[in-house]
Amino acid sequence: MRSSRPEVTEFDRVKERPGGRNARVRQAVVGAVLRILQEQGYGSLSHRSVAALAGVDSATVYRRWPTRPRLVADMLIDLSDTFVPVPNTGSIERDFLTYLESITAMLDDPGMTKLTQALFVASIEGDEAVSDVLGEFWRGRFSRSYVMLERAVQRGELPPLLDQDAVVEALVAPAWFRAFVSRLPNNEAFRRRCVGNALVMARNELCVSEFRRVPGEVDC
Amino acid sequence: MRSSRPEVTEFDRVKERPGGRNARVRQAVVGAVLRILQEQGYGSLSHRSVAALAGVDSATVYRRWPTRPRLVADMLIDLSDTFVPVPNTGSIERDFLTYLESITAMLDDPGMTKLTQALFVASIEGDEAVSDVLGEFWRGRFSRSYVMLERAVQRGELPPLLDQDAVVEALVAPAWFRAFVSRLPNNEAFRRRCVGNALVMARNELCVSEFRRVPGEVDC
DNA sequence: TTCTTAATGCAACATATATCGCATTAAGGA
DNA sequence: TCCTTAATGCGATATATGTTGCATTAAGAA
Image (cartoon, chains in turn cyan, yellow, red, green):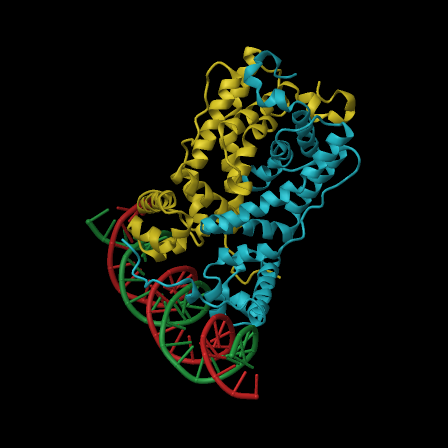
C-alpha cells in the first residue's frame, strides 16, 4: 500500500528560510524553554508559557514544536556549554574525586536538578527521535571526560584502557542511581568509594572484564 | 497566625471507613492504574481513563487521588511481589550474572519498561511524599538482593561486607544508567564487566573505600 | 523597488483536565 | 431493623490544552 500523497519531485520541496525571523523566533522560544525549566521545572513548561515568555503566539509554538519533549530536545541542541568542567589536577585520584564532586553538586543544584529531571521526563514522554537526541547529548557530555583518563595513561598512572565508558560509568553511575532511583544520601564517603572503585577497575580492566576466564585470579 | 479553621477535639476526627465500598473502590482504581501503566504508559494515565477502567466516577478518583503521581504511588504500595527474583546458584559469580540479567531483562520488557518509566516520571512530577514512597520502594527491592551477598559470605566466597549497598550499586547502577541516561547498548560483555567489577569491589571493599590512606596499594 | 509566499498573529473553535454543589447510596453502629 | 453520615455518582462549570481558518507580515529573489 502506497501513501495517498501525490508524487512530488525534489524541486517541489518546501523552500526553507533558515535566516531572519525564522531564526529569531527559534532563539526566543528555545531561550524561554531553558529559563522555564531551570526556574520552574517541566511541570510548568507549556506551549502557552513558552510563547508568553518568548513574545510569540502560542499557535506558532504549537506549529513548530508539536510536543513538549520536542521543545526540550531542540533547546538542548543549543546548550553547547558543558554543565560539568573536566578537572586536570595532575593526579587521576584527585581528578576523579573533583569530577564526581561536580556531578553530585550538579545533581543537588536546584536549577540543574529541575533541568536534568526535565530531560528525563522528556526522554520518556517523547518519541524515538527525542530520546535519541537526549541520549546523544549525555554520551557527548560523558565522552568529554575521557581526556582525564587519557592524561592519566600518558602520566603512567593507568594502563592503556580498552573501554573508557566502563570506567566513567563506574565513577558516576552510582551517583545518578542514588539521585533518581534509590535516593540514598550522597556523602563524602560514598564519593570516595566510587572513586576507589573506578580506580581499581581502570587498573585491572582486563582482569575485571574477563573474570570468568581466570576465576581464581579475579582480585588480581 | 493561626488557621481560621475552628478548633476540634480528637473526637471530632473524621470517622474512616476502611472496609466495604471504600476498599473496593481503592482496589479497582489501583488495579486500573497498574494495567494502564503496563499496557499504555504514563502518558495514557489520566483520572478519566482510570475511572473508566475501574468502573467508578472520575470525580471520585480526583477526590481521593488529587494528582497522577499519587495514583502511581498508591498503586505501588500494593505491588508487593518482586519484579526481579534473587537467584541462589551456589556461586556468587553466577548469582550476580543471573541477577543482572534479570534486571536488564526487566529494563527491556515493554510492560516493565513502561511501568518503570512511569515510576520515574511520577517521582519527578510528584511532591516530596510521593518521591519518598518511590525511593522506599526501590530501596526495598534492592535490599532483598542482600541475601545473595550474605550467602556468599557464609560460603567463604566473600569477606564480611561493610556496605552492601555499595556492592549492589556497582552491580546494577551502570545498567540503569545506560537504560535511562546514556542509552548505550546493554550486551553480554557489558554485564560481565559489571559482575567482575562488583566482585572485585566486594573482595577488596576496605581497600577500595579507603584508597586515599594507602595510595600505593589501591589495587591490593 | 516590487513580487511571491512561508511564517506569523489573531480569533474562533474543539477537546481535555479539574472543581464544585447536591441528591443518592451504602457502611457501620444503635 | 432503622439511623447517621461518609463516600459516591451525576451534572454544571471553570480552566487548560490543542487545532484550524484567514488576514497580515516580512524574508528572499527578481
